[in-house]
Length: 124
Figure 1 (cartoon, rainbow, N blue to C red):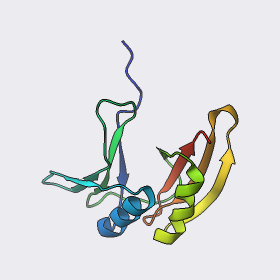
Figure 2: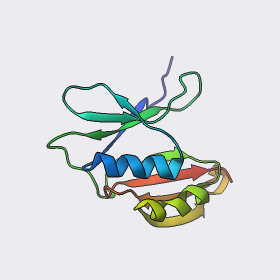
Figure 3: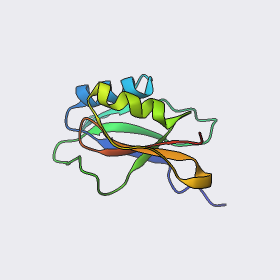
Figure 4: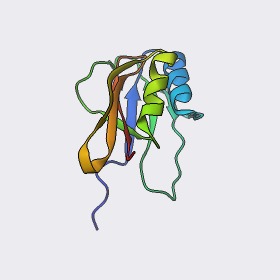
């Protein structure tokens, strides 16, 4: 049996209040505090009975964040142009407006309030 390659994601942040407000506002979700004694984590909503992966914002002393290199998280959207339009309103920056990726749908790229590049994906 082969498992999915990705089972969890973490987005490192410097300012949790600012980052949490950004993600909750852009995606219209409520993040949930996860118990951890060593660092602060806020989980995105996850439906264990549906496809996809869970993940969280993480603030950990001594761990850098920001920049557009390294791993990139793509968030599923009904129409990625809608979330892209919210990015600037909540303190982020649209890096690349919605564009076609052929038969695989559409993507937009944005920088969050912490300087992390994120992807937005939709089929329309």
